[in-house]
Image (cartoon, rainbow, N blue to C red; front, side, top):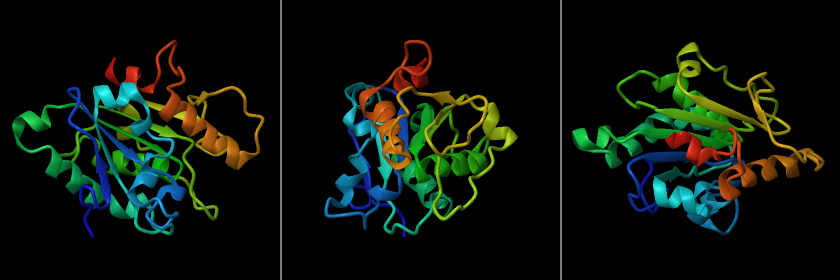
Length: 203
C-alpha cells in the first residue's frame, strides 16, 4: 500500500530549497495509540522551527508496529518521486534522517538507493538505530558510507567509532533512547561544533 499524503504521510509546506525525509520509530506507527498520523510528530523535525522554516518535511507512517522500513523502501521512493516532479524538483537537495527503527530504515534506504536513479541523497543521519527482538542492524554499505552522514549514538545504535555521543546518559536505556531523539530532532542540540543537525545538513 503506497503512502498517501495526509492519510499515511505528513508533508509540511514547501519551505526552503531542500527536502528532508524523516522515518519514525516503532512507537509512532499508526497502531501506536490514538494520535493517528500526528504520532509521527513525536520527537521529530516537525517540532523544530528551524527545520520547518528551511525544509519541506516528508514523513511517511508505518501502519503496524511489526512493519520494518526495509520492506517499504519502494513506497518511500514513490512518495518522494510524487512530491518532486520535473527537473527543477530533482534539483532540490534531498536529506534522509530517522530514529530507532527509522534510523535503521535510513541506512537500508541509503544502501539501496545511494548513487541510483530512484533517490539521490545529499546527506543522511541515523539517530540511535535499533531493531526489536535482537534483529541485526543493517550494515552501512561502502556507497552509503561515502555520502556525508552523521551517526548519533544512544543506548543502542551502531556503537561505531565515528558516532556522536550526547552527554547525560544516566537514564534507563529506553528512556535515554527517546531522550536522544528529542535532543536531536526537536530541540536541535549541537552535534558538529556549534551546529545542530539541520544546520549541518544545509552546510
